[in-house]
Amino acid sequence: MDTTDVISYINSNNLVGIRGGSKPREFLYIWMVVVANRIFVRSWGLSERSWYTAFLEEGTGAIKCGETEVAVRGIIPADIAVLGPKINEAYLQKYTSEHNRPYANGIVQPAHMAKTLELVPLAAGNIKAKQ
Image (tube, rainbow, N blue to C red; front, side):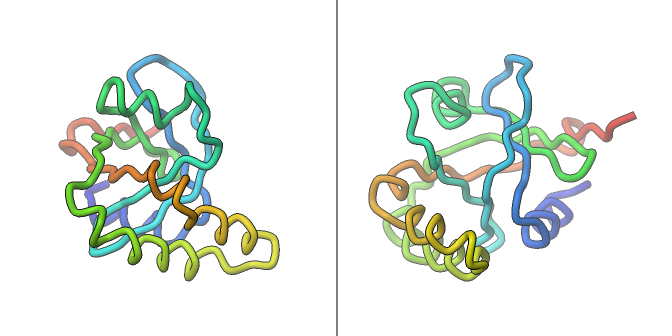
């Protein structure tokens, strides 16, 4: 699975597994969006200890695309001021069901916007298909 496949998977699925850091832990299934062929995530819970804070502390983690684990680097994008509105629009366009709409409207608010990370897939050698 290469980056193009990862992006395609994210575009086709509302929930994608994420695990921040290197410690073994369960994947948490969250919303992810793609803007300009780049992957973005936001923390919903804003908790003190989370996948988001694990990425800030360690810089790496993984996402789960189907049965495939993809190692990723999590960074705060340098161009977030420019991309923020586009990321907001991507969330609002992707998560349109009646059930999702209140959460989509919430995740585009400033507190959540401040918790935006870009996920960058690492080398193909770090992608593990479930055996």
